[in-house]
Structures are given as structure tokens and as C-alpha cells.
Length: 194
Length: 78
Image (cartoon, rainbow over all chains, first blue to last red; front, side):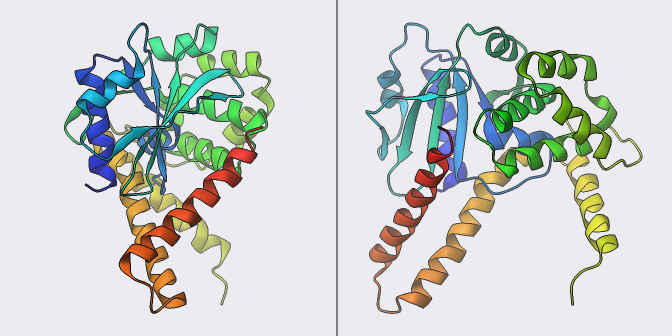
């Protein structure tokens, strides 16, 4: 099983266990920006009353859930890690919470496919807002800002700037957004990919 | 010879154009695919450093290096 098949198998299991989800992190910025390598796949999930271990019933041998539960420091979401042992590829799950932005982002998710499996993505505006939020809150990784820069260049004027500005104001990232928006590479507008 | 800023900008613009023309389901597969390529390059480096290493040991060293990178990344989350 290669890295693409690992992610596809995981999405198949999420669907079989009827766990609402969306692909986030660098896979989502790849979808709307410029592709880069990623050593993990991140998902937001809505577990509700479904125990996470139920996923194991639908996953092929080799997957295991790490017993240690973590927390995403910006939104205080609960974080679980799933590994496919033969390879070093990591899957991270963040439980959606009732924080206003987190809930809004999840409600706005849109359908897509991954390796033929039905899945969901945040909207491109939410990739921008979330990555900017992470870049501010201690997880100050240059690659998050680069991801935003790439999404702004690729999506261009198709983005809902009013929505982005509203949430950036809430998160204290408006100044950084305006700087990146002003500096973005501008090309003749073409329809962004679907 | 260092590439000129003009060349760097032109390459970036090409990447943006290509990204605009690529369907999302295809772009979603790129991250794990590029990671697999990166792992292959790392395996080659490990084999060059440890010519006598078995395939199993190469995988073990690769996992150690990736886990070390993950720990460094986790430490910036705090």
C-alpha cells in the first residue's frame, strides 16, 4: 500500500463508519494552491457519539490509533494520530468543536473525491483563514504563509474577500492577509480548477 | 550561476498557471506522491551513508529521521 492508497483507505473507512469529515492541512492547500510534498494527511472529523476505534473495523491491517490524545493549541481541538506502520505516513484527526469559526468552516465544506472515494474539502477562503491563524498562533511555520501565498495566486479574484477579511479581523491576522494579498502574483484571470 | 529573479518569477508564474489548469482530485494526490518521491531520495541517501545496511535497516533509519522531524515540528506547536 503506498501513501495515496493509505489516505484513500482511511477515507473509505471514515465513509463506512459514517463519520463526517473534511481534508484539511497541506492536502487542502495543495488542492487550491501549488502542490508540495506532505508527510501527513490531516482531517477534521465530527465523531459525535461514534468511538474512534470503530474506524479500525473498516481499516486494513497495519493501521493503528496512537493511545495518546493531543490538543491543537489554536482552537483547542482534540487531536488523534493514526499510523500505517509499514510506512512512515501519518494521519492526524482533529475533532470539530463548537468554536464559531471551526463550526462555520465545517458547515461550508464542499464535496470532492480522493482516489475515487467521496470526500470533502474546506472552501479555499477557509484554507486561507485557517493557515493564517496557525501562522500567528505559535505554529509560525514559513510553509503555512507560503501555502497562503500560493492559494491567493492560484485562486485570485475568485476568492470571497469579504468573508476572509471578516474572519481575519476576528483572529488578528488581517494585516498579514492584506500584505500577502497586495504582494500576490497576478496573472490574467482564468477559472480556478474544480 | 544563480538564477535571475526574472527566471524565478517566470517559473513561479508557470506553476500558478499549471495549478489553475489541474483538477482538484488530481492535485489532492500530489502531496502523498511527492512525499513518496522524497522518501525514495532519503533511502538513497541512507544507502550511500550505510552501504552495508539491509533494506529493513534502511526503513528503520528512514522512520527515525521522519519521527525526529515530526518531533521538531511538534515542539513549535507549543
